[in-house]
Amino acid sequence: NAGVMQNPRHLVRRRGQEARLRCSPVKGHSHVYWYRQLPEEGLKFMVYLQKENIIDESGMPKERFSAEFPKEGPSILRIQQVVRGDSAAYFCASSPLTSGGTDNTDTQYFGPGTRLTVL
Amino acid sequence: GEDVEQSLFLSVREGDSSVINCTYTDSSSTYLYWYKQEPGAGLQLLTYIFSNMDMKQDQRLTVLLNKKDKHLSLRIADTQTGDSAIYFCADSWGGYSTLTFGKGTMLLVSP
Image 1 (cartoon, each protein chain N blue to C red):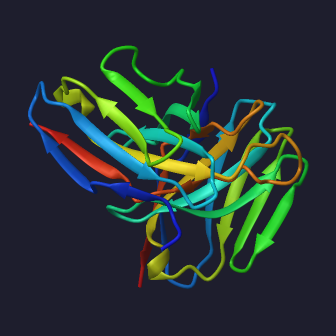
Image 2 (cartoon, each protein chain N blue to C red; image 1 turned 180 degrees about the horizontal axis):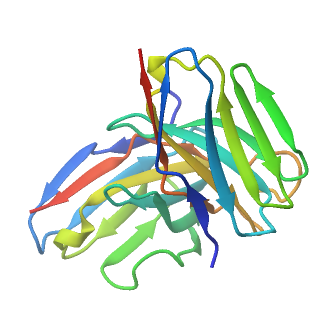
């Protein structure tokens, strides 16, 4: 399967614990995006990363949340000291590169998501 | 800020056409997308349209874009029960591809 991989698919944490969500982009894609979907809501942008760089984290809460996309290995979204309001589906997407032109090489392909439940 | 709006629910009979509508506010949108989400699953890209186009057809799917009114629609011909899902409209803008999503339209297809 050459698509975006996310794991775990389901994650249960107690309040105050840490959650680590992993995303492996499509092979050859160097751009990763994280989105959060609250129940009965659309997806909200959180952060956009390229290898070893955070390009835009304007959608990410200032505290407890962090993201990385190292040179080797998957992208990680880390949530420290989780609270019940963090319960949501977290989706990762990848694209090959960005372009402002007419060739849509920046189409994002989504993974199956990680459903986080905080007890 | 940027906003994308969709009707929340649509019910059709199998074999009919479905039309899902979307409006957006950002006039600098470059691409507009339709994604499909089945229960418990991720988002599947259905189709997209570049902002200088007004129509795109792909098999049973037809996308219409009215840039003046900032209105996007997705028409599904010969709707099947397998088309039942939530359909999200999204746009991208700016120098890179951050997507802004609507809340999704739940399409229910009855036999």
